[in-house]
Structures are given as structure tokens and as C-alpha cells.
Image (cartoon, rainbow, N blue to C red):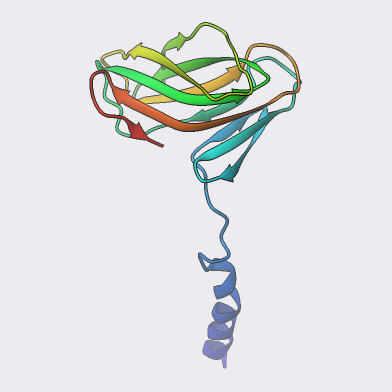
Length: 156
């Protein structure tokens, strides 16, 4: 009887565990903001406006220290933002930060990029698009790429 109960419990939980019911995981995380996929490869970011430096972050894999990388993203909206790349080593110790100039977005898509020379001991980066003002805003992004300088893009 105990085996039958366990099997029944498993069968009842199976639809919950099924990939059909699982929500799609996106690789971008909000920083004082909500990030939602609105169509294939297009996301909207809605900031809370409670502080500066709200937006989104992602941590690409396969980063190697000592390389020069290009962080590139297409953006549009009515916000003032900047790109930011934070570097950490294998122990999670902060190493360096590279920040772009402040950029005003508009209603047309705009490609923004930031070149970063990684520290030798860098094993992970956090690539971010953040607001520079304390205001509730909304912007969209697509085609996020990280690539080695003079190499093809790796889209995320």
C-alpha cells in the first residue's frame, strides 16, 4: 500500500514538474527592475525608480581573463542609461569595473557597445545596463552579445 501511495504522489506531481508547465527561464535579472520577454529576443525593463543604477544584469559563461571583449546591446526607450561590466575572480572577489558614458535612449533602436580589457585573473563578469537617474522608467533591449575583440559575436 505504501508503494502505491508513493507512485500516486509521483503521478500527481508529474504535471507540475513537466517542462510544458515550467515558465521559460531568461538569462537576464532585474536590478531594482522587472525584466520580461515581450517577443523573440526582445525584452522590456521596468525600473522601480527608487534609486539610481536600476536596470538589468547578466553573467555570460566562457569568460577568460586577459582578453579584450566587446559588450554590445540594442536598446530603445525614453531613458538615460549606461553600460557597466564588473569583473570578479574565481573566489568572487571584485577586481575591476568598466563604465560607458551616459547614453540617452529614444524611440528607435540604437546599438551601444563597451570595450573592456579584462584583468588576467578575471573568471566571471556581470554585464549590466543601468539607469543613471532616480526615476521610474521603461526601456527595451535585444541582441545582447559578448565577443572577443576582432572575433564573431556570441549572442545571449
